[in-house]
Image (cartoon, rainbow, N blue to C red; front, side, top):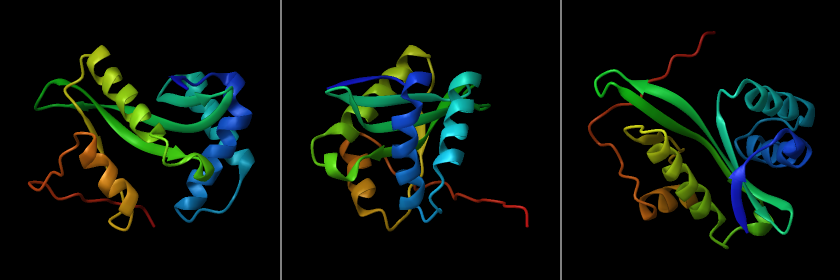
Length: 147
């Protein structure tokens, strides 16, 4: 098993994983939308996508977006998406993807990495603290969505 950056040649298999990820969060299945979204991210290089390649089969992925912290005057990464195929879970792939994400933070001289997960995500809420993430109790997370 190796973790590597996603390439355009991964689009077909990565899109299936990404579509499953979106369905996990209650979105309707749409492979075409998944593929075009990922193609755009990879071509525009506006995110970093790392995949778990296990015997030439993609087993999971993580996608990070660059942010900037004005108070820290530094780059900051948002771990936005993390998913491992249901049939491949329990083998540590998520931890490998998180470790590669930590390496990206260090390589890019960023000040850190943040993520958000739903309170109902029991697996994620156990995984992230076990990999060194600390829950920020000092801040409130607010969101605005146009209607």
